[in-house]
Image (cartoon, rainbow, N blue to C red):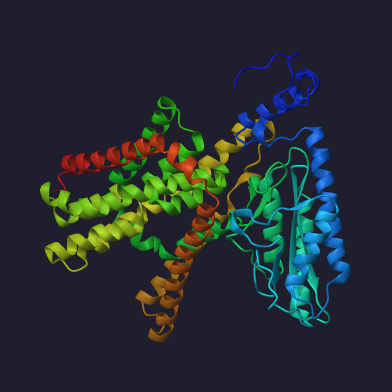
Amino acid sequence: MQKIGRNDPCWCGSGHKYKNCHMDFDVKLSEYRHKGSKVPSHAMIKNPEQIAAIRESAKINVSVLDYVAEHICAGISTEQIDLWVYEQTTHRGGIPAPLNYEGFPKSVCTSVNDQVCHGIPSADVILKDGDIINVDVSTIYKGYYSDSSRMFCIGEVSPEKKRLVEVTKQAIEEGLKQVRPWGHLGDMGQAINDYATANGYTVVREIGGHGVGLEFHEDPWVSFVSKKVLQYAVILLGFGLNLQTVISVGSSSLPIIISTISTSLIVAYILAKVINIPTKIATLIGVGSSICGGSAIAATAPVIDAHDDEIAQAISVIFLFNVIAALIFPTLGDMLNFSNKGFALFAGTAVNDTSSVTAAASAWDSIHNTGTQVLDSATIVKLTRTLAIIPITLFLAVYNSKKNSNTKNFSLKKIFPMFIVYFILASIITTICNYFIEVGIITENISMIINNIFSFLKHLSKFFIIMAMVAIGLNTNIKKLILSGAKPLTLGFCCWLAISLVSIGLQKILGIF
């Protein structure tokens, strides 16, 4: 963007001089950007004249909802609500924004009872006593958009429905408390999520809020999915780690594990500087490649405050090379004349994600008729790598905090990622229980129950990761991901290649294969 002079017209189109309009704003915006925050583009910023026009549109929008509130009752159809909205909006000089928008046939969205949103009005849908209905009105006035909805209880509703409506309304109020100049958008979604979950509810992950003004659906997208879901996934991951087994069996692979992890992080750091990759994406790809793919990214993302598109990009890169590794590594292992132990080490250190490690090791076992020998060893090596989540996330938490704040005011307690503590505790619980089972302190029936619980928690961890990643995917700009994907793919490939070469080289030096 061409630099604007102090006395030039401001970029916002207000007609005022830059120094008297958005110059101070841009200085502060730059400060936030340098601190690592994701800041809005100029295209998202509205000037005072635009804000005033949007406010006039919003007045019409609210008055239409007020009219609906006065007349809605049992016995009417949602088609009638649509007619009211059309008549009242046009009477006030506005245009119903949903009408013919991407093929939508009506002037309003009416969602009854368990319908989440965007319900289409119909003469066949008659409101009954005890129903709840969301009426979502959107207005265009002189080219400016506004959008709001209201929930209505029809007659006497059940206590369950009444509480749902009340909690939802208060959740919105809690979110609005976070709306302030220079606040963070994620704080609003987090407040809504926290209030909903504290009251025993969950948020709809496929849907979020959005900006309005010059278009119907503008940036920013407001996600109500908490990044804490990723943290919960990491905690539950700890129930798959038997520290005793990892230490006893995995210790022999430590030199290779440490070397491959170090190599990946160093390569990621250097290449991020050389080919100019954003720090957070480079960090996520580096830890994902070196430790345990999606799980490491899940653990690291909240610590470095990574954005959804950055997480999605890192996951995509890691997934691609996971698939490639699972397909070609068994053949490559044969070409290099790996022993069973050698291939287990290779798969456990050079493949990112646990599922891909097990896929490659299982393929080797099938080809060489070795039962689950290689699979068991590779999995232990992989779990040993997983422990590196702990020191790396702690380091990143400290580094990120000192980088973005005054060092004098630095507090480890405030920035410490507590979910890592719970991850360790989960691992310790698993270890203790497995020890009691091995020595016969716990009966066979109770042992079976414990193992089933641990198995369920491990599967739940995977479910949480998938759920969070799906939500992130729904919030990802695919076009942007593709256009900006060349450099991250290059970084991911270089990390993957470097890890593979180091693993092979060290095994050769140590005489393992």
